Structure formats: C-alpha cells, structure tokens
Image 1 (spheres, rainbow over the protein chains, first blue to last red):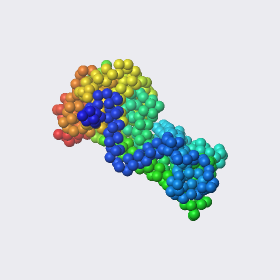
Image 2: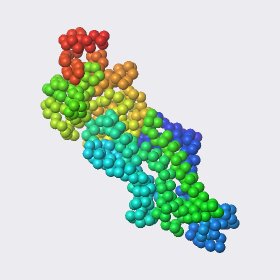
Image 3: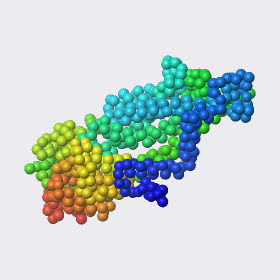
Image 4: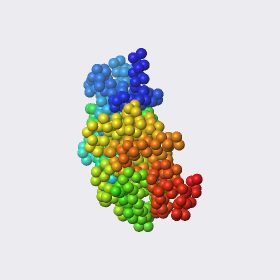
Amino acid sequence: MAEQTLRAWLLTDTPTSRRHAKLSALYQGWLSFRSNTMAMIGLGILLALVLVAAAAPILSPHDPFAQDLGNRLAPLGTDGHVLGTDSLGRDILSRLIYGARITLYIVALVALIAPVVGLLVGTVSGYLGGWIDIVLMRITDIFLAFPRLVLALAFVAALGAGIENAVIAISLTAWPPYARIARAETLTIRSSDYISAIKLQGAGGLRIITKHIWPLCVSSLIVRVTLDMAGIILAAAGLGFLGLGAQPPSPEWGAMISEGRRFILDHWWVATMPGLAIFTVSLAFNLLGDGLRDVLDPKAGE
Amino acid sequence: MSMLDIDALDVWFGRDRGRVDAVRQASFIAAAGESFGLVGESGSGKSTILRAITGLAPTWSGKIAVKGHAIGQRRPKAFYKQVQMVFQDPYASLHPRHSVDAVLGETLHLHGFRDIDARVVKLLDDVGLGQKFRFRYPHQLSGGQRQRVAIARALAPEPELLLLDEPTSALDVSVQAEILNLLADLRQEHGLTYLMVSHDLSVVGHMCDRLAVMKDGEIVEIMDVAALRAMKATHPYSQHLLQASV
C-alpha cells in the first residue's frame, strides 16, 4: 500500500513542491531507462565494475604484484589461479580486479576534464559568435586535425610516461568533438524564443549560457561521453600497450595485454583475459550510452 | 500622453548587397492605456517592429520613445520593467527544462523582487492558472496553458507596455478566445498599453482601439477600429485586406 502511494506520488501530474517536481521527473526518467534491457545490462556491468574496484583487496585471491616464477604462465583453471598466471607468475584474476581501479580512475578523470572543457569552449563560442567564435573554432580545428593517438603519444613523450599524463593527453585530444557538439546545439538554442524571452528580462550572457544553454547541451554531451568512454578506455589501453601509459608493475589492462603479447601463440590467456575485460567494459559503456540517449533527449519528453 | 512614440523607424537585416529592409519609415504613436494593432500579411514587417522595440533586432534607425524617453542601442534594465513581450509560439517560448515556478521565479529574481513565492502565486492566479500548475514542466501543459505562463512571465515585472506578437495564432480557435479575453481583462485590471501584431483582422477588431496596416515594410494607413468595422479604409491595399477578410 505504502509503495503504491509512493509510486502515485512520484508519477503525479500536479507536483506540489520544487523537490516533488524534480523527484517526479527523475523517477519518470528512471522508468523509461529501466524499460531498456540492454541499457540495464550495461549499467549492471558498470556497477559491478565499481563494486569490484572498491572491494579489490577483499575479492582478489592473491597479491597482484606477488611473483611466483616457479608457477609462471599457468593455464586457465590451475589450482588457486582461475584465470592462470602471467610471465612472472602473478595471478591474472587479481591483476584484473586491481586493474579495474586504474580503468575507473582514467575514465573518471577524462570524463571530468574533456566534456567540461568542450562544453565551455563550445557554448561560449556558439553564444558569443563573432571573432571569439572564429578563434575558438580554429583552435578546435587544429586539435581535431591531429590523429588522436598520435597527439596523445606526443604529449606523453613530452610530459613523460605515466597514468596521469596519459589521462591529460587523452583529455586534450578528446575535447574538440564535445566543443563542436555544444556549439552546434548552442547555435540552434540561442535564436529560440525562450532565450529571447529571458534576454527581455535583462539577463546577461553568463546567466543565459550557464542556466539556459548548459542544461540543454549537457544531456547530449553525457550521451556522447558514455559512447566515447569505450574509445577512451581503448586509447588508455593503447597507450599502456605502447608502454607510454601505466608503467609495468601496475596492473593496467592495456599494459597487461602488451606483456602477454610475447606469449600469445603458446599462452593465449595471458593477453586474452585483459582483452576480454576491456571489451566487456567498453561494451557496457556503449549500451549505457544508448539507453541514456533515450532518456535524456529533451525532445523525447514531449 | 503617448506611451510609445515611433518615428521614421527603419529596420534592416544583413549589410551591403545582402541588406534587406524589413521596415521602412514606420511612424505611429500609441497613447497610454490604448491598444494599438499592427496588421498585414506575413513578411510585412509587423513582428520586426516589435523586435526592434525590444532590442532583439539590433540594426535599426529612427526614433523609438517609451513615455517620452528615447531609446538608444543599449537598453537599460529599467526598460525591461516598462516593456515586455509575449511571443507568438507558446511551444517555443518556454524553456523545455524549466518548470513554471523556475520560469516565473527567475524573471522575478532578475527584476529584483524579494517576495518571489507570493508573487508567483499571485501571477498564476492573475492568468487563470491554479497553484497545481506551479511545478509543472512545459511538456505537461497544453498550448493555451503555456501561453498563459508566457503572459504571466511578461506581467511579472509589472510593465506598462505589453508587446503581443500574434499571441493566439498558434492556438486552437476556442483557446484563442480564452486568451484574448484574458488579455482584455488584464489590460483593464493593470491599465496596460498593448501593441498587438496580428494578421487576423477580427482579432484586431476585437482587441484594439486603433490599428496600422502594413505592406512590404511600410505603414500604408492608420485607422481606428470604427473605420475598420464600417469597412471604410482609404488606402486601396487596406480595402483589399478588408475585403479578403469578410
């Protein structure tokens, strides 16, 4: 009974307070998201990843750095090593579990930096127009013209190898598409009547950009970010594979593939297991992005 | 006393060879408390005059004076407390992510009001929307309800001059009548001056005291509503327009 009334309260057409209206909108978004099975699978995988990363010391059967040269390159299903061991006898499962932390760290940092920079540049450029638009968009063009991985390589080479530098390098190469999307959206929004209407209340450019344009750009950016996450994980893995991202003892998935490459013919699991992990997480982000697009698209709410 | 005095107003878009003159040498005066109509076909420059007055069309020359104060290119904040506008399409003039409460609250905040909650309640009552609409989003409202919200937003700063850009043309006929009656009531209650754009002569005949007929960016005739009802237009184009609307 209580559940029934809570549901009715959340689904009402006549909210009675600001908080009520917000919760109601959130709940309806959740309902439409929940009806998308694939997106729920994606969300489930990512939640599991977060849990695994948080509980890594409890879940992992071995120390990810403990070497056991007598037991190197053990195959799948070996006693005590479900996913086998790598060339130094380290447990692959434990390394994958600890590697989830690194993956999440990279994803979170890039997701914080690139879209925010893109949103700022794109909306300012689109709203103000004129020479500011020209300057900002030509800078964007220059960044877009570089192949992403090559530019990231150059940054890492200049700044030194390491996870933080890999993140900065990926972010620096990832923001221009967001700026382009945000600018295109801003151009359609800025000539609309509701922007004219708020201008007639004497609102300044800062308020219009942050309170009226951002909320409408953010949803398409979030969707784009989740769809790009797969690419970002792969880019990070690629830098790790090339030895320019995470450095050897650290269990970063790309670096693990790189180590396993030497044995790929005789001991396929060493490179395959981290590859499967990257594949699963990338797929989960793509599924989630698809589902979010259905929920967050402002036109779908009509 | 004149509320709005427009003299030799030119409005254009683009420049050099791409320049389009949307309004040429328009002049009229709307007295305080009067309801003045602008009629003409689409593209005749009616709405452009409103956009020039509010500053949404920045390239204009001539004289625009509100209550005797001429307006420059940049409008002070006080201007927007005097002059407000209701847009044509209520589906486009409300932010899709802002609730009614947010729209009205922000408007009141921008105009420096302190008692925002009480004023939002009062505005909703004024436009005939109950409290139950306060926290709804635009997609939960009908066209007529949205236009009422837009009217409430325009009334929020307590303006003296309201510019109405075909406020009912996007609505159903039955809803049109409701909105027009609401506008007529509000004018009486608040002593507003209206400048109303429409291509519908019957709407103008119902709402306005005097009207200007526009053709190709020029005002060809200014007449009062009695002349409109008696079909006594002097300019051939206005006669043609009257004939076509019967």
